[in-house]
Image (cartoon, rainbow, N blue to C red):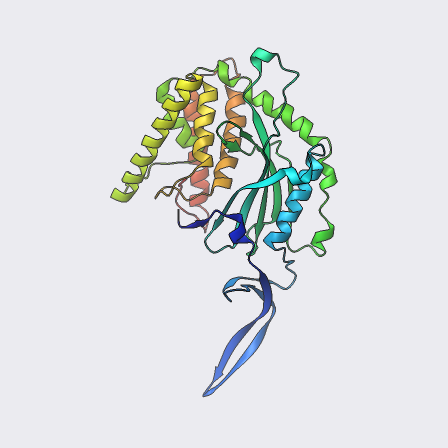
Length: 334
């Protein structure tokens, strides 16, 4: 991965909008003509143009988005005071065109009081992730996910994460953040999450399946004709997954729960690699999608790992084929 911004304070830079002009030349004469319906978002300190957007684009600064994030925490977790939430992580490209900022609570943990003591899962805590952009590519959005408190591995579940998305082209955006919709949904989300975790410890996963399933879950594919650089990157990823697999199997056992931790660990801590093009946010969403699928499949009476691995390969191949037919197709990498 290229250099990234990981300190949220570096994302609080001021921005402003300016008109966009075209330079017209006729002989020795030059003039500037304003382009109607367009404006540029500019880094106020450096003068660098971040993006060009439509006239109706509603600018929300990262500072404003962070304030909305704290509001989301207040509504989703009314028993926890606002000032007990802190910024725990940030991730953005060096351009600052978009960002993801995580808010976590140092002591908040999901209580599984309805589960028998011997069957309760590890301690997990919620996190609120805000996404904002200055380039129209991403809506202002808030996701609630889960992270394992002991190691900070996180994921965003596909069907039950509490997600609010706001289009930057909506007028009076600041007046339309209906976080009151969160009321009561987090309790159901906790139950959904537990339902996904419970079958994992009972599902035996031999060592040889950890690497292929992890790579398939996070959409890591081996190029058909890898260059030396790609092969070196693949080998480095394989060694890292092998280390993580040994770590979690030793601590948890050779089962689905250990496999889930390998997948979420790799997704939470992506390293610079020639085959690593996805951001942490997208990898954690892939981890959540995989968890939901694996948890359901491993409860089926006829479940077996060879068939499940083929099932994942078919999913990845189908997605790759679909991308190949797209005008904006890109190589299938992590």
